[in-house]
Image (cartoon, rainbow, N blue to C red; front, side, top):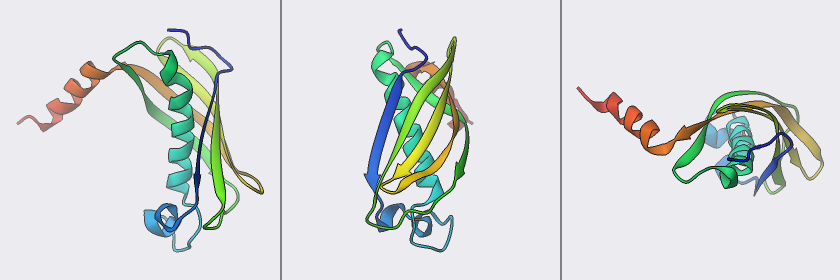
Length: 130
């Protein structure tokens, strides 16, 4: 495992009706929805880590603290960038930011933990047991 401070990730999409605040039920307007901005930030984050994990490992998001500072209309390209700022054992902290073609639209911090897939899924499945 070679996860280091400074590693970066990126994810992008185009705002469509499917990722608006209306679609997420997080607002009434046809603009890029905050839940989708958060998901894009998480995507950029896990993508920065995944290539450096051992087989059978993943990461899960545990904290996200962001501001959504500017609206993005349907049809504009949006992207998120992440940068690892701390590696503390299995805990990873990242700085995240989201942009559209006109500039910064949101920013904040994100925390992820490295997990073993099989163990994590087994523990999760126990919630369905009687």
